[in-house]
Image (cartoon, rainbow, N blue to C red; front, side):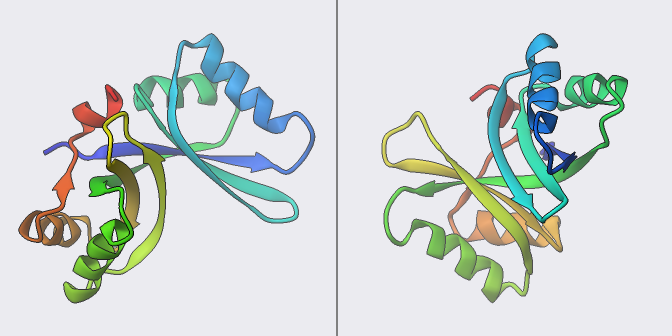
Length: 144
């Protein structure tokens, strides 16, 4: 199964820098499906799932914006108190380290999607599949 590609953009923590990125993507017809931003005093890392990551990278590189593509895993969890815990326990029990995660809501009732970066994507995918947690394909995620 083809994995989801996330784009990460290094953003100077200054007025107007984030809107430069979103303007470039909007003008290029790129829809942002999910995002997360982690910042420090001077810089932030904007992580995004978009419907066409290769096109998004090309658009941002033309604007001299530092961008990188990374493979991540997207899982579908039950939108209930134990949903995320079940997925995280599967990683723990299979000795897979979680580097970061962020989520976005599903259009389906009672489900949510969680984007995860782990130290071993193959082992994480196997743990989720064997544990009854659905892993979404890139095609599924890009068309949500």
